[in-house]
Image 1 (cartoon, rainbow, N blue to C red):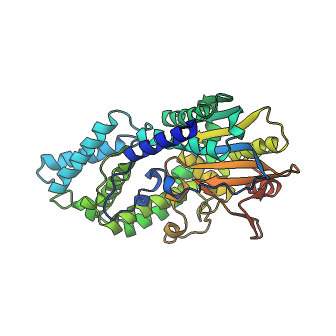
Image 2: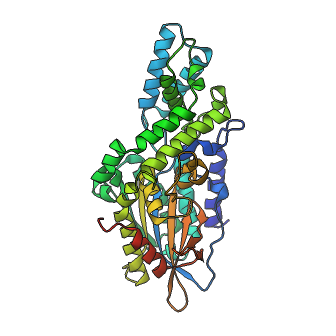
Image 3: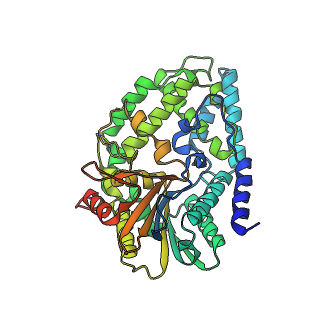
Length: 419
């Protein structure tokens, strides 16, 4: 049994222990950005022929599966349900939800937002996939990795890089993390125009209208035996969804059908999806989110340019690890298929722009730089496990092997001159 087979076998065994505990009839995609990475739909065959050779990998990723990011939502719900219980107005379904919140507390045990066993498995497997895609390239040389300071992101970087180091004793892997990378990986906290848009943007009114029209009060109403204002119930319904959508990634039993009908749960996903779209992508309200990711795209372009010129000083890969808020705007700025929908209405977004396709847990974009026999450079882009077919500005398809000079020119045009 060779080393590669043993690694694949161990990952398959680990996967069996991490199979999601799914609800009947509720697609896991409705958990949106909290959906664990779907390895079952990834492409297993590289799109280039033997006369092309990978010479560099650029990689940008979101952290892997985590526990619920904070106890704020759990505490708010628990306080509301406790008050109802103390006044004798908590229903049987309300008591069930209280027990669910206790389970979340017990399993999380203070590890709010931490990378969990599912996330560790995801990163190990993603590292294994990277070595399978370019085994000769990653057999030696240096891979450099940077991450934001947030512990789950740091751990994501370590897990994937550990897998690269396991692949070959001849590859050098260096890692670095910290607030010095905030402008690159957490620009959603450092770009003043973007921060202002998140706090004060016109998107809020559009989102609120969608919630008022589409979110049912019924799931939250089922928790109580007394009347509660509709607006408060709709907010509670969304909070319930926020807890329930986190359960599969945390390996907790997921049974939304106790409180939600499928259309009600889907409407909550549509609201969450719309909020991600308005806040992080290019929409009718603003392109400031995508513009804020310009420094990250510029870094990718410069790194690719060095690889095309053969000036990498022995580096074979540049890896960057961040958040959903890192990758969603970047993918929109790059105009990757499925990630850029600039003129969507609130009603059409869910059919054209899906957060679980753009940024599931473990989301990643791998850019493989290729050279042919005469030294011309090309790139292939792999988004969340699928090789992308890119098109030129005039609508002609490059296919999955894209001349680097052409794609470089496009991406430079998308970067605002003010950045």
